[in-house]
Length: 150
Image (cartoon, rainbow, N blue to C red; front, side, top):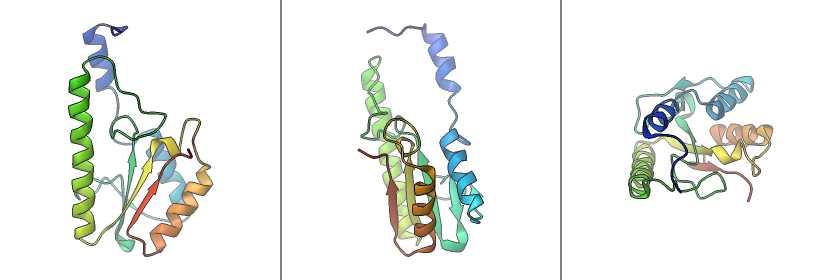
């Protein structure tokens, strides 16, 4: 199926997608702040985590399901330029894995909140997500992954 817009319009639309301060990220930030957690934004650490909690030696990534190739209902392979997208998303996944490995090796704890946990038909209750993150931050588990319900 051909794209419904011309290449210039598609390029403009794609360039308007933000990498920082996304709605899912803002939801997590607001909820954690309300629970009393203080954090830094987009620290200069491997992978540039969305939230850093140096006091707890913990970082949180809020990943978009499309851009990071998550296996959920929000992810669908584009029909145009499939080889480009397969390479791009595979590269994003490799960078994510390398950043997480480096952070863990450096003594940081890593949490990943997937977009599908915050929106769509499989979303979880924000309070549930916040409670899980809060317990993880103050706990001792190294890795936490929060995804939408199946």
